[in-house]
Amino acid sequence: MIKALIGLLIAAIAAAFIRAIMAMITKEVKEMVNPEAPQKPQSTAGPTSSLKKCPVCGTYAPADRQYCSEACAAKAS
Ligand SMILES: [Zn+2]
Image 1 (cartoon, rainbow, N blue to C red):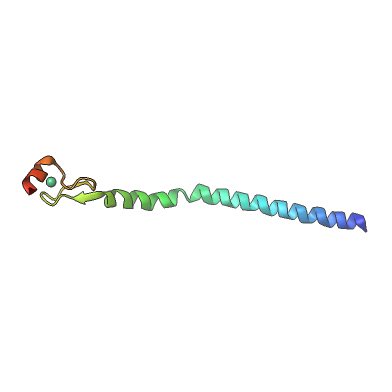
Image 2: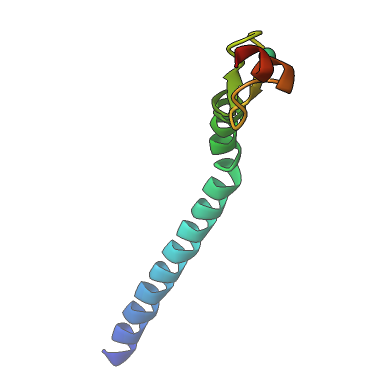
């Protein structure tokens, strides 16, 4: 009677353990696959969003600069 209970308990613990390991493996596989997926939209959206068209000559310059060069800034002012 007690042996059967212990057997059930061990089976339950083993099942939970296997489930936890399977969850860890699937999570690791997802993490191995996923980093490539979020990086792609970031790398495509990043440069385009950080680039700004120069209002003077139309050249794309980093967004932190209003004009592509000092010459264009001088022309605009
Ligand atoms: Zn320019």
